[in-house]
Image (cartoon, rainbow, N blue to C red):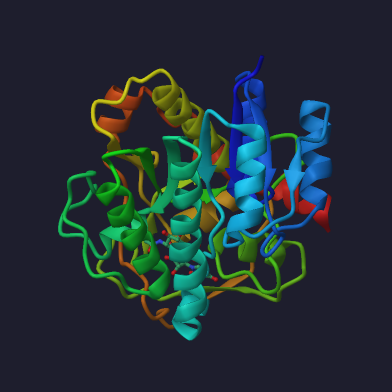
Length: 335
Ligand code: UD1
C-alpha cells in the first residue's frame, strides 16, 4: 500500500507540482484546497501528468471539523502544509485576514494532527523571515529580522509555533527562495488571480501582450546593476525538495524534531539579469521601463545551500534559462 500524504493547498502553484512529484516518488497525495487562490483546472493538469485525479477535499484548513474528518479518514503518514495567503502588499492592507488564515490555519491543523497522533509535518516557510540580512548568502543560522510585512510575520510566527511543539511534532521547515517556472510539459504552472504581484508572471503576461510593460522597481540600489537581487528557483526543484523532506520524516532520519532548510539555488540574479536571460532563452524582447522602488523590497538575498545539500541531500538542478523557458511555455499555453 502506498503511503498517503495530505497536501494542503495542493492545487496551488507549488502544491500542484509537489503533488506530481509525490506521485512519481510512490506516494498517494491527498489534496485539501478551498480554491481561495487556485483553480480547479489545476486538477486536469495533474491528471494529464499522473494519469488520475487524486482525492481532493474542497475545505478550508480553518474548518477544524471538516479537516479532522479528512485526516481521520485517510490517516496519512505525513502532511505538507502549503495552504496560506502569500501576497505581501495585501497582507499590509488586511493583516487580520493573514493572521487568521496563516497562523490560525496552522494551529487548527496542528490540533487535528495531535488528536490523530500524526507527527510528521513539512511547513512552507520563506526567505522573507531573514528580512534584509546582515550576511549573504543567508545560512539557516543567520539571524532573522523583524518581518517587513504581516505576511512575513505569519511565517516567522509559524516557525515559532512549530518549534514550541517539537516535543510531539517532527517538522521539516523549508524556507523557499523565489519559485518560478512551471512543469516542463506546460500542463501545470502558476495561475495568478488578477494583476500579478510577482516578477515572472508579470513579465510573461507583458510579453504575451496582456500587460503593456514591465516596471523594474528601482535601479538605484547598491547592487551590481542597481536592481534587486533574488535567488530564483525552478518550482520543480522546489517541489522535489518536499519529497526529500517527507522521506526524511517517514524514515526517521531527523537529527532534531524541528529542522530548517534553505530551498534555493545559491545563485543571486538581478531583475535586469532576469529580463536579459528571458530574452536570450526565448528570443523575445521584454518591454520594460525603470520605475520607482517598491516599498518593503529587500535589496538582495540568496541562499547558502551547504546544509540542505549535505543534510537533506537535495540540490537544485535546473538553470535560470530552463526556469524562464518553462515559464514562457506555460504562459503560451494559457493565452
Ligand atoms: C517576496 C518574498 C517571498 C515571498 C513572496 C510572496 C522576500 C525577499 N521575498 O518575494 O519570500 O514568498 O514575496 O509573494 O521577502 N519586481 C519588479 N517588477 C515587478 C515585480 C517585481 O521589478 O513588476 C522585482 C521586485 O522588486 C523584486 C523581484 O522583482 O526585486 C522579485 O519580486 P517578486 O517576484 O514580487 O518576489 P519577492 O518580493 O522577492
